[in-house]
Length: 137
Image (cartoon, rainbow, N blue to C red; front, top):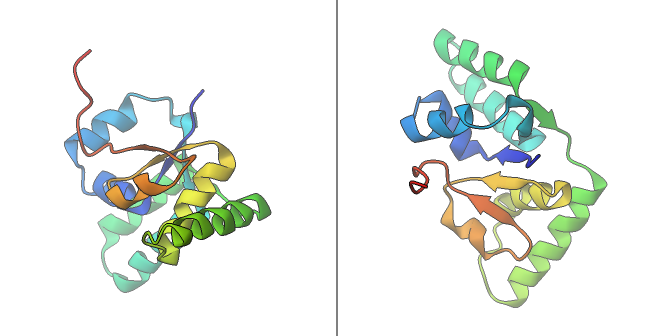
């Protein structure tokens, strides 16, 4: 079973009920979905900025009980170092924030689900953009 790691921007689209993202989430087994602990941290930051937004707090809580949050590991840290070095050597964008999610997905052999097109520059990273409807089969 393919594991899909939802990036923060995709989770945001999901919480905002983006039709294509909802359709894609519903098309895969719930057990195949996960988020990085980094995404979970970003979600908690967003909630801290909006303490009175009860619907958002409920939606994030419901998401977090249904989608596994994967801890950052030594393997992810190693993948981070290697990926950032390769991009740095090629003079590609090496902003640290981009590499945390990417390297975490690489270390798990997971598909990173994001609509950040810069993520496609990393060798060894599988990426899908669920904000776009898949082509008809």
